[in-house]
Amino acid sequence: MSLLVVGLSHRSAPVSVLERAALTADAQVKLLQDTVAAEPATEAAVLATCNRIELYADVDKFHAGVAELSTLLAQHSGVGLEELTPYLYVHYEDRAVHHLFSVACGLDSMVVGEGQILGQIKDSLARAQELQSAGRLLNDLFQQALRVGKRAHSETGIDRAGQSLVTFGLEQLARGGDVQQWARGKKALVIGAGSMSSLAAATLARAGVAEIVVANRTFDRAERLAQILMEGDDTDVAARAVPMESVPAELTRADVAVSCTGATGLVLTSESVVEAIEGRTPAPSAGPGEDGPGAPGGESGPAAGAQRGGASGTSLGSEDGCPLDLSAVQGTAGFSVLGEAAVAGMAAADLEQHAAWVDNGSVGGDRRAAGGTARPGQTGTLDPAADTDAIAALAATVATVGRIPERRRPEPVEEPQRPEPVLFLLDLAMPRDIDAAVHRLAGVRLVDIESLAEASAGAPMAADVDQVRRIVSDEVAAFGAALRAAHITPTVVALRTMAADVVAGEIARLDGRLPGLDDKHRAEITQTVRRVVDKLLHAPTVRVKQLAAEPGGAGYADALRTLFDLDPETVAAVSRAEDSTTEKDRGPA
Figure 1 (tube, rainbow, N blue to C red):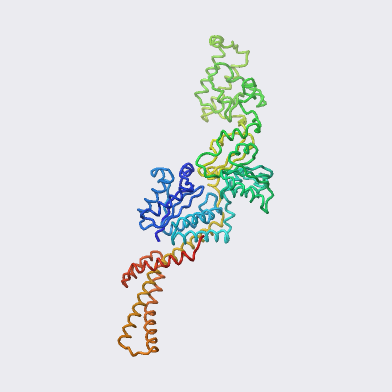
Figure 2 (cartoon, rainbow, N blue to C red):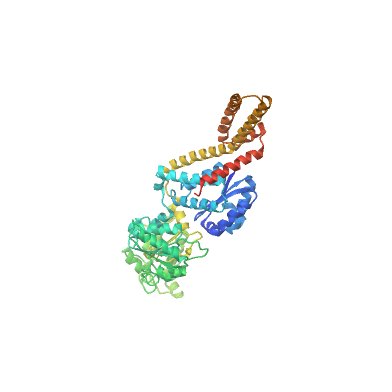
């Protein structure tokens, strides 16, 4: 076996690279054709999903195969080889089998345990079979991967470890709440009618949305999906199809939109989303600095601070010419303009500067010379004597602890509240369908592949995952043993064919020497010679199959051919005959 896989996924590459490297259906076909036409590869299959691109091939040279497959991926993805290489991973022989089986079980998915990958693997095999780029190795590999994936889902609780990407995305839209409660009564717009979009539509229907509108470039496919939704026994949802040109208008009516198309450009720009939510998003409540206390025309400064704090304070730092930058301090958690809290956290040097300003304030003409208001010590908003005493006490504290502690409970910082979303967007496409700038729009919640990757990165793994990993390990060992045993079978068949030819030749010579030998005796002699040959070959052929099934056992076939001087062309002819028979029996996946 010389199985090689070269690829990249959400685990090895950022979403931005995956987005640019995404392959269209036509690009996948061309990639397969070019791969089998390349010298190192005899078979090829492409597994391309929203978060992975992998090229599988049967190669006769490892290093040449890696170089060729990497180059082909770069050429057909449109991402330069030098840029793509750091994100590529390579698996060979048993490790490649282990990787595909893990993928089929959902262990390598963005959402662990999701089952949609099985359908994508089946589609990949069907495409390779249609293009005749999958031979015996990849046919057996992908069909076994499908069986392993189904076994993992039926024998373990891997489904509890995660959901489909669609379900996980809807959970993120609902902020982890109950999806059915969140979706009940909403109007949904589904853009696209492929496998992912169909799954999204079915999931929304089961979740209890009131209406689903399907938009697709091929209107017939949109109509077919809408009809399937209407005829579903487990849902009661109104569904209809619209052309893609109707998306802007439908978006103004929708509460939630899911997009997963094969478009290479954006389907929904930030401008189109803004237009869709205009007139139905309530004006956000005023935050700090917006038409409220602290804003132009509103209350601000010490008076406002006194009202918020509920206590009277001095005018410390409120006079014109004060060296303290209290405009910055007032907006910082842990500071206020009330008395000692105004200088809480100040360094000693800043405090000394403020003390000098207070001292100057108690001397008559300095303030007037600076254009300020005359401040006799006994009048005005500042009491220099009291403030000087306070500063002296605080200075002593600075000498001990280094900075002035806050003696009051810090006032909470008011953060502007984003309005509740009126439009929920789920982008499952790669490359993305919805402009990432939509994240910044008020009244909109967008969940895309990138945010799904971040949300699932720290998700806990279910205990069933360990059981699935054991299944994968056992299946990889069994597949490798069967493959290695199958590799030596043509050699064993060729050896027995040669032995049968030798027996036939000797019986023919016996007939020439004993022409009067009757049929009964001739048959008995022939049977005896055959039994002797079979017994001599039985132990070596059984043992060589056992040895060949073990790791590193591929060399036994070569040894057998050398020891018995078997014709390589005869062995190859047996192998071709077996492949032809297997293909007829196998049929489509």
